[in-house]
Length: 183
Ligand SMILES: Cc1cc2nc3c(=O)[nH]c(=O)nc-3n(C[C@H](O)[C@H](O)[C@H](O)COP(=O)(O)O)c2cc1C
Image (tube, rainbow, N blue to C red):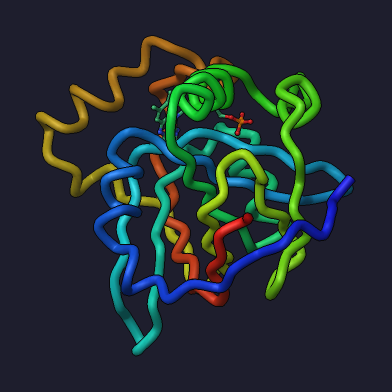
């Protein structure tokens, strides 16, 4: 259940370094679709401008449960946390699939009702970007360097495994329409 925690709106431009440093270690992408809220760990992502919009781009392999949810909802939150507890949450959400378990319930995460979109934030990972998908595209396997294909798509782990390396990535461009820190 989502709750109305106190939120402080922030200017994303003042938190860019903090956000990028966090992405390198891991952050959550949370999606909501068909009554389910699910979070997965990512460590690939970019922030920047196109069409005069501030955009956070994520790269999600097509086999992920999150991919399916994003296709339906076209929005997500990016959840950034700090400290030991965050590392445990990221490890869990990066190795289990929402297709078979309720990660939010298993971890006892508290959902924060959204400001600009319906996807909630996560109290335990308080820095939140609210993103609306404005563009998506499957990356073209024919133009990825062979060395990268060999490294990232060796295809020996099937799609239904959280560590799968068969599927290519869809880029989801999320226009940042809201940003807050849960207090
Ligand atoms: C540190 C870390 C970073 C990850 N980054 C990504 C990523 O950028 N894109 C992706 O598709 N999967 C990534 N994964 C794998 C997913 O988090 C993992 O497959 C997860 O179980 C998918 O959850 P879902 O099935 O509920 O969508 C990462 C995993 C870890 C541990």
